[in-house]
Image (cartoon, rainbow, N blue to C red):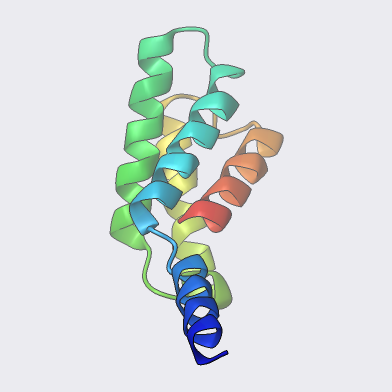
Length: 105
């Protein structure tokens, strides 16, 4: 019985330890799919995803989703990045990208 409890404890710990690199890769993949609908050039899509990934990694901090300042900083960084690609007026794209960022970063 003790051995079974130890195994269960290890399993729960393993499930709770999500690799942040894997999560960020999922985030980049989600952004890639999202932005490919807005831009037709695959090179531009990849550059936009890399730019968003870079600014989000720079602006975020642990628990940013639960603070007004973190939320505001990420939204400003995302909006500035979309402006460089002339996509800043597409509110639906902005909100979808923000949801991806909030989920995976």
